[in-house]
Length: 610
DNA sequence: GCCGTTTTCGGCCCGACTGTTTTCAGTCG
Image (tube, rainbow, N blue to C red; front, side, top):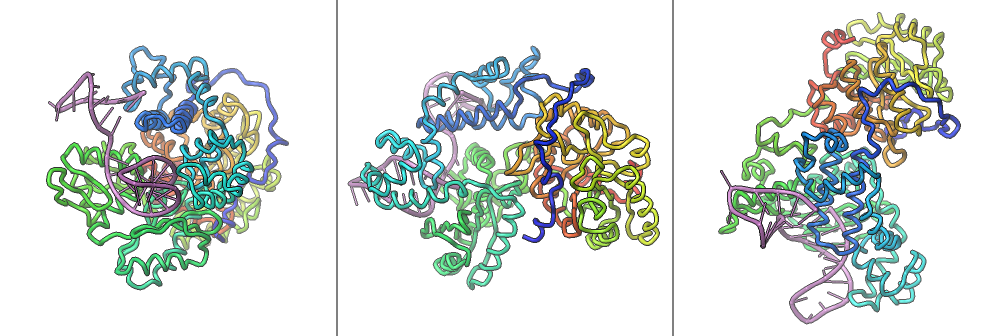
């Protein structure tokens, strides 16, 4: 995990509590951008997701549950505020696919009051312990509810005791094996539910691929699932193989050195745990089914439901074995993914787009984006050196950039406010820029080194360095490291201030999230994007695998709004530059092409925007 | 709960594996 350990996350060592000062609020000079809604789309989506989860525990109609899930997805992915739509008499929220009469009413209640009585009621009806128990692998909503109802289990300790005493096994539908698997499951319940960074999953996938490649008789092998789709985090790994001898292939996977458990093994499928709790599934299929299986196991679930619906409308059925005509079961496709999509009248769709968002409409219109690739990148515009918390000198970073095919870079160390990283005062910054001036001739014709800075946006608003200093920079990133927990209005104002500052080129890691560790700032991103569009400020996609900030939905929104994106590594060492690939994955999920990304431009084109 | 060039009612994607069953429910993806 050398790469990840080296690509440090700046700000992660910062003591947030110490600096979370509240400052008096400026006049409301940003109302032109901001939505003043109390409840934003993400919050409404979360409510509907929780409704779906609770309804599932109650054993409700699965299609009603899915309707809540679909409604949540629709609202989460909407690029404008539902509160704004509701407030506009000329618009109808029910025009959004997946939102019907009932969900409109509930959304209205949420926007008006911030609460949903039905959710409160459901929460009261489903005991917390049932939800906790259902997170144990192998236990679902129904079994958890039954254990609670019939045995009065109130804690995981109760459950453990009941299994050890054999009480659980006496329930109808339960037995000794269920008890044993519950006991195993309790031990790993917490870790089993955790998602890992895509980059970590990538490393594991490579290890397992190496291991499996030593098994003879495997003709074909391909990873599927959310890993193939390039999600920012992944919950498990799905491997698909074609093999002469399936039993030997499954035996070989079971012999993987880091396997801790076999969860299940049948004729075509095996599931193991690797390390403490991470699940790896392998499916064996016939060569003429490979494309259908790959399409199916790549998902997403929403994408598959949509493809099958299209197939159905055309008198066909899709499963993991192929595409079949409904009337006489004739197989129409299955060997390749291209065939499967072609059978239902669509071009092949890149896995990163398979989320049932824009891909079906774009495919039908022939306007699927030609997604960006790593080789399109010519510059890296966010990196640190030994002057602050980086491990390489300017020359180290420049040489490493040349090795990676870059034509231009920006040196962007921290500003003085980031004291723990020895942030630069104006004097030290000007001295660094002098050094860059001295080094530049050495790199003439090979690499352009820009004089940059990652300037902090201060807690009280305003920039950490004076305008006359910023004015001398080639490239100014603005970012928040302190006061991350400020209320929505306050932190939004701070960031809007930076967006509007004429010296600021780009907003770095705009939402501040750290996957699995820290939620985004409560910033009104809709307002920030509108302002960025108006002021010509660029937005960063930080490629650090723990950040991937902006997220894919923000990227898609930026593309629609015509806001150029800069994909940057935020490297704190030479190895840190290798994270660019993760940013590219994320950009592809946002539907970005090379022309949507600024640092795909040649130096000649790029310098015209400085 | 959503949706509609067959439908305002009756559909809603599809299958593997496990454990406890003797024909299937629950879980998972």
